[in-house]
Image (tube, helix red, strand yellow):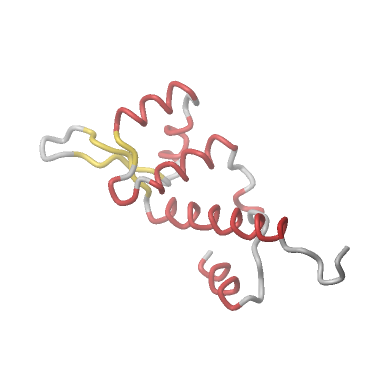
Amino acid sequence: MEQYFQLDVLGILKQTKLPANLAWLSEGDKQCLLLVHLGGEAGMHKTQAAKFDKQFPDIIFKLEARDLLTWLTNSHGKQVSLSLTWKGEDIAKLLLLVARNESKKKRTPSPLGI
C-alpha cells in the first residue's frame, strides 16, 4: 500500500477506488476504521466501541479477526480503548486518500468549461 501513497504524492496516480484486495470492506467496516483512526493514538474508547457494536454487530469482531484492530488495556488488563494495528492504520490512510481524491475529482472543473 505504501506504493499507492508514493505514486499519489508524485502525482502519477490519483487513487479514487479501493484496490481489489480491499473489496471485502463493507461501509460499516470503513466507518469503524475511520472512527478509530480519528481517535488518534488513543483510538476509540470502550464505551464508544460498545455503542458502535450495538449499531453494527460483529464488525469490530471481524476487523479484530483480520488483525486490523486491537484492544488497548490498562495496567490491570482491563480493556480501555480500541486501536488500529499497523495494517488497520494503512487501510484507514488509504480510505482517507481515496475519499480526498474522489472529492477533488468531483469538484475539479473541466479545462474546456464543459
